[in-house]
Length: 236
Length: 259
Image 1 (cartoon, chains in turn blue, orange):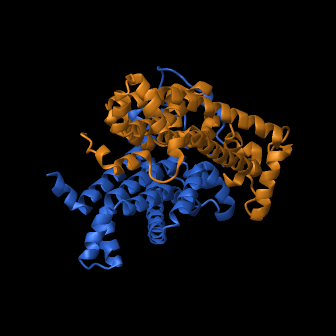
Image 2 (cartoon, rainbow over the protein chains, first blue to last red):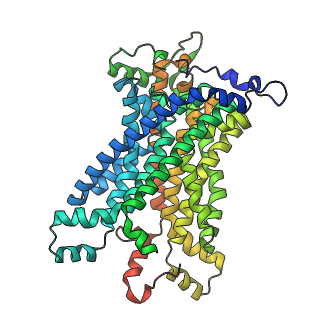
């Protein structure tokens, strides 16, 4: 309640330089240094929401993509469903889930998982479909079974596209998790919302969210280099 | 937030029907004294929401489309056109709105500006990618027919990039409609008002507004999909491989791209 009942009149208080930094909602490095510890908990909550949602989302979309890849006809309906899901504004989805699963991290995670599907499913299926038919034929000619073709040929060749989807999904999950406080799941967004007119607060909490997204992005990029050694070999 | 309604123990179904009732029938506010909700207030909030969103998307189009078309045509600025949307995706929308509230101020034009910034990256990137994806052979053919460069952009590259451009427009529009919910944080009334002021509107108002805004976003998405169909040149409408792929299959037309 306290978070959402922010008196809007308070937003009118804006002031210029002069006087003390804090009373003017200014950008105060001293205050930031002294109060960094209050951002640790929200950052950890944010990290938790992101990691769990992306991991669960990846498992689901991977299974769905394998099914769709095998059946052929599943791709179009699943893609359409994930696009429609992605269209629902996250705040609305969080709020609509609250009566069902309560003000918990679970509510936020359900919605965040739903939003990862559009990027993950599309990229995994595209990665698998884009493997050249000639390559698969060559593998079959070498005596590989269909199962071996999938895991030893198609999957490794799809890794760059899959990881590209993972990068987009992770960045957008970090982004959407800033609104997870509407589902009562905390995170850096709750911290931003609590004192949205205080510049120091907005800069630190918003900056941490951007930093988190950047760190994840670099980690996945590094993972991609490790997972696709032939790309490096080809580049040199 | 849940305490706003104070009736979390109520059966789920009655919460949802109460929310639907809020959309159509006005009731006394939680704080008392004033009437809230009902079709009148909901439609005026929806109108505000739409005006704000439409203005932001229109202005973003005016900025991003010519820039993307031009960059794509001359084949420059790939780094700018691509990285702008990567950066745009990494900046949380709440943080963007909060930066504007804390550093620029509240009010309609500040929210509008924040939404424009939000809408530009997908539009710019998709326009650029769409134009770059046009077969160089098609452009060469147009040049050979004596078209001027502006004509090539208008009559060849723009129609062939329509699908990609609409993809960007859909992304932008959906995220602008979603983010306009945060308008009331900057004193701009939108469908987010019953959500942010849950202490006045109650749990039913919060949930009712969430329904309306979700329906609105889906409606915008569906309308843009229909518009995309209408705007796509007839030759590209046939489902199946894109024109570029079809051109590629003709052996003498396909040559490796120099870049």
